[in-house]
Amino acid sequence: MHAAHRRNGFTLIEVLIVVVILGILAAIVIPQVAGASQDALKSALRRQLQSIDDIIELYRVNNAGTLPTADPVSPFGAGGGWGVMVGAGYLKQAPFNGYTGGSVVGVGTTRAAAAALAQGTPEGWLYVLTGDRLDVFAAGYDEQSNKLSSEP
Image (spheres, rainbow, N blue to C red):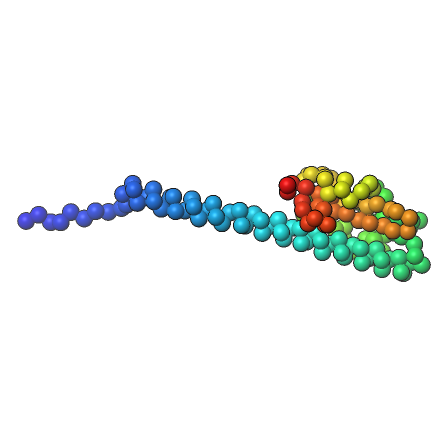
């Protein structure tokens, strides 16, 4: 009498089927995860911009309508820093732009120019002073269209 021969392991076909199934699942899941991280980044930038606008308005109210760019001791934007906004405690620290990886604030020209900056740009933020208005933009992000510069 012969003992039944027991088969151990998987056949090549079974392994290939599992690999194909895993590939299909990865093709479905990975783009969704990548999109979620970009959405989180855009949401964070939008919240920071709103906070910065509110804090600039608070500074203005506390200083008889003067903008932080006109501070005689530590003006906003001088040397790429946040000046009196951090120095006087309006901000705990310089805001960080997660898209460009920078906290430096520099003089900008337009919203579109700020939005066009690429990842890795030293500036995290750009500001435009127009009369009695100070607008701050996140480098590489267009808040109106809610798009990063790397998105079509």
